[in-house]
Length: 120
Image 1 (cartoon, one colour):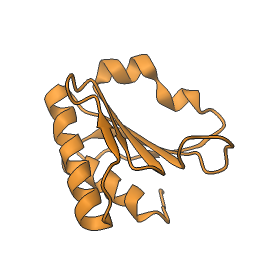
Image 2 (cartoon, one colour):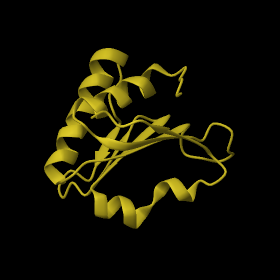
Image 3 (cartoon, helix red, strand yellow):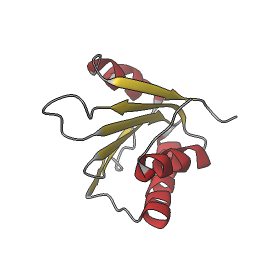
């Protein structure tokens, strides 16, 4: 079971689940030296329009329920891979092909990775 002390992480996950994003992984980087953030949250949407909808939902949940706005959002033009930078948390939202190609979860083999159960 996943438990977080970080409200922002929890609200981002809720935003992903609200739009039926799936294959959610929380990569905890807190104990790894010289990383750019404390968490990666990685998920997948079915298509570029689904990725865009998930991005909008994450932004809404983070803003309204955690008081957080991303410092940057990149990738919306093609919406194959959108990255949302919340400084300590970076959200990666992929289409299936891009997710398989970049395989970010396996770049951090020494990180603590928690898979979140998909909502049907």
